[in-house]
Length: 265
Image (cartoon, rainbow, N blue to C red):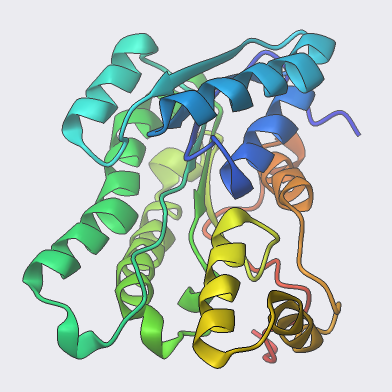
């Protein structure tokens, strides 16, 4: 299927690895020009080079990168100094650390909200009016399945990302955007085979004395699909939400989790 977005420009945050990289690669494969942004310059440069060689060059897409912290005003200013307008924006920031809510002070909460709620809102503010003026725009926020099924030790993430979800639900239904071809949706990933998941499993292994393989098998057994998702699968979902064909999908929370969430809605 031709997604009809070749030649568009996309900003993909947190795209040096994991789910963000999967999204950047899927968009580049569709001929979308991509600006990849992340904090780690060396890893980002290597990821951009591989994305360009494996996907961008084949599809005639430009793949650029910028090592910046998108959660800071300076980082966002640098991004928009590189390119003022984007047709597609994929927001993505590393989740706050797990812990006991009794240990989280105001600073910890502000940091979580700033990175996982206010930063996406700032990116939306900076881009949606231009999208509406051009008659096309796609915002995809990578959040977490914990928004739908909260996890006690991820309270910082639950709170900040739920706030973003509520904000997007309202803005996406604004006719000044929806009627002008601009959609805003959230992707709520379950367990995907990324460095972050491996890190949490290693922590569980150390805590329980079990092997990493045992932890992996136990977690996969709790998923009806009996496996973790791949960044490529996630990227394909993101690319479709950015497509011309997805223009009637807005204000939605898409939950790719292998069937782990046990509810109807």
